[in-house]
Image (tube, rainbow, N blue to C red; front, side, top):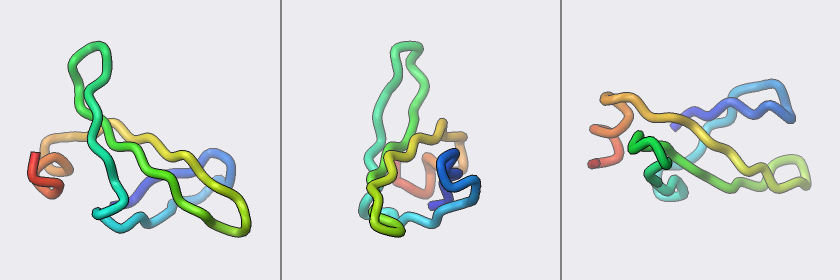
Length: 58
């Protein structure tokens, strides 16, 4: 799954087994992931659409 890192200002590819699906306060689904890249830990967050939810089996 592709996330955008604001710190790196580039897209980051994350394996789907490292992605955690959460529900926000407003009821929408979002994906969270923590990845190490370049010696730093990136905390990534992405609001999911219908196609992304189907990919993750939600």
